[in-house]
Figure 1 (cartoon, rainbow, N blue to C red):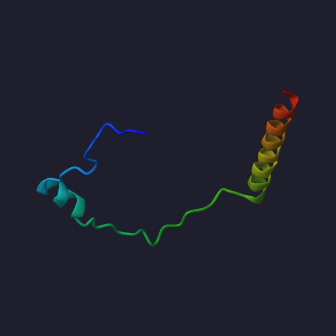
Figure 2: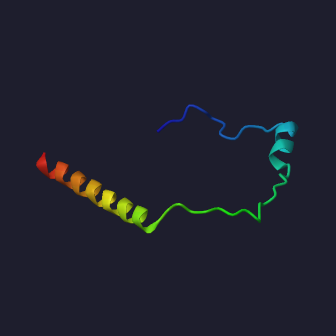
Length: 64
C-alpha cells in the first residue's frame, strides 16, 4: 500500500510545544457524596436484555 505523504512527522513550533508541555493544575473533589441509583434489579435487567439480544442475533444468522 502506497502512502501519499512522504513525511509522517511534522515539525512542531515552539508555541505548540509549550502548549503540549504545560502542566495542568487539577483538584480532586474529596468530600462529594454521590448516591448510586444503579440497583441489583437494574443489573438483572441489563443481563436479561443482553441475553435476548445475543439469542436474536444468532437466530437471525441461522434463518438466512
